[in-house]
Image (cartoon, rainbow, N blue to C red):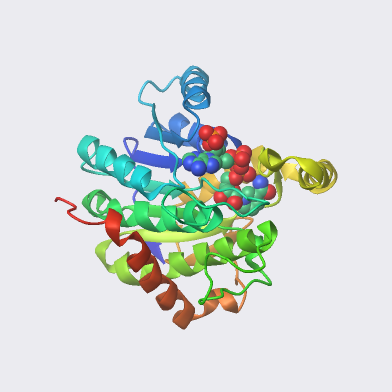
Length: 290
Ligand SMILES: NC(=O)c1ccc[n+]([C@@H]2O[C@H](COP(=O)([O-])OP(=O)(O)OC[C@H]3O[C@@H](n4cnc5c(N)ncnc54)[C@H](OP(=O)(O)O)[C@@H]3O)[C@@H](O)[C@H]2O)c1
């Protein structure tokens, strides 16, 4: 187990902080006195969240940056700005994620689920390594899901060009989150950066609603019948962000270290995914100063 001293002036960056569990965790971090940088895609929702969270928590040290994290160019632009403004970052929460019922590619030619849910976690963490190292007790928390169970990565078709299903692509992306967490921890635990991931629970947020149609109707019914509150999921995320001790590379559910699926424990898959992710993000990692 590694431990991180908790300071009242931590600099915390949280993606997907404008809705759902990210917004609740951001509020908790703000109440602790962190300087919280909220990241979201929609500028209007971002500014509204910033105003509400500032009023709710009384913390004047909050800020918002808009970035569409399905674009690696935007991840790079965001990281450049964060590095310029914050030589030290104590906490990075990779939380922004979505399910796309229909297969779509970004302008960069990347399948959106893989780009937003996995490559953005990978690239943003990589680009912020230096400020996280400067913390001396940096922490990276990745929001995964129990949806990874039953999934396997198809290394010949990571971006699901064949037989796309939104749910399967989502499952694979959440498996990728757990593999990435373990590979990252192996590389950087020794430099003082603690990394872990979690399943926040099946919780009633806006998740999946943008898809519309039958899928959103069925998901809406499932949320009404079975989901826990967004508050519960957000508190679990806050727990991982703030608990003094975390198992490096660990997967948590209900605030307890839990075994993920066998596919998520494969060292070979974690390393293979790491190398492919390095190659795919290469154009946006070049000429990084500092
Ligand atoms: N809800 C669940 O039951 C559940 C279960 C397991 C895991 N999770 C995971 O929890 C995480 C958060 O989901 P949630 O349930 O809180 O969903 P949510 O209410 O839909 O919130 C998603 C957040 O991500 C942001 N986001 C979405 N697409 C983005 C993009 N392209 N670029 C930047 N930000 C983007 C959204 O910002 P905008 O509003 O600006 O678009 C919003 O702040 C996801 O990783 C999800 O996979 C959720």
